[in-house]
Image 1 (cartoon, one colour):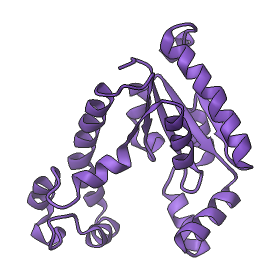
Image 2 (cartoon, rainbow, N blue to C red):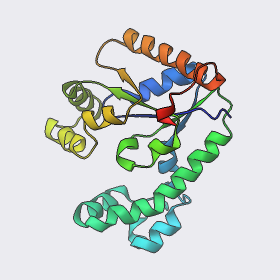
Image 3 (cartoon, rainbow, N blue to C red):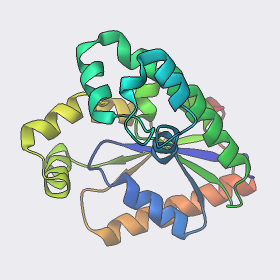
Image 4 (cartoon, rainbow, N blue to C red):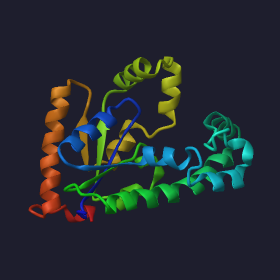
Length: 210
């Protein structure tokens, strides 16, 4: 595995998943932390015994998976519940992501981390942070169309995520996904070439990022 890694993030509706697929098509290895989290809390997932021990058997459904609706309600009503859940999940997700990266065969690894900026520690674990950005109005319209949510529901989700300014401040690289797919593909191709060069050592990362 290459030692060069990228942390990919972006707000809901930014098109981060599309960007990940475009990088994967060019040969990058994608490690999807959301996918890992879902596998951890799926039927008889590796995090479920600890979750049941911490919260009670009522938070597992009939299939042995996390009862997401019940857990969401608890997190909303109990300010400590989110931290207790994250204390169980985050170390397991991190270890599984690192194991997946260690087994990667691509020229470089992209960690797809929806809450990279919010989680605090990911920025220190990657060589560069790549943010997918778009105007907030575009985010809202995309999520309303995709998920069938009302505007106020989408805005509530966005209010619990980092702001565009916070993500921009954490970014080394930014992809603008407010326009056409062709423009997005051009940006991905440009960054892919850059990351290949970093990975091969033909150019070096500025010292202030090391």
